[in-house]
Image 1 (cartoon, rainbow, N blue to C red):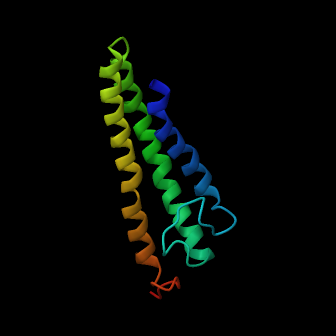
Image 2 (tube, one colour):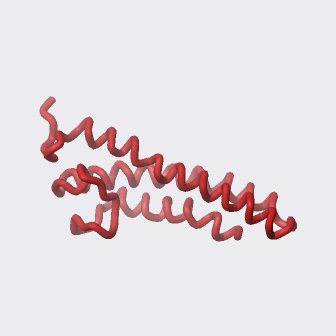
Image 3 (tube, rainbow, N blue to C red):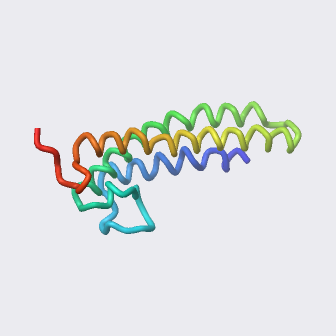
Length: 121
């Protein structure tokens, strides 16, 4: 359960680092940060991945330590107790992962029009 509860922060950190440096080569419907605006064109695709990547990398790193500490406190307890709190920890981590959509979409809308063209300053 310890390693399972560290998977989300580790995956966020891994993909965050990966997306900061390069978005997936092709705009696709199966891999990467995919929203209506992020998939409009190559410019929005790369911007969204760079923005999401930075956020996921930082949040993933921040979540690793508290997640590990919570799980260390659960060592030696009954399986049901560990499962009860482990599931709650995973839901908190998922809230951070899904919550990252908001600032990325705000950034996209600040820089791009609805059609995917860059806004003129």
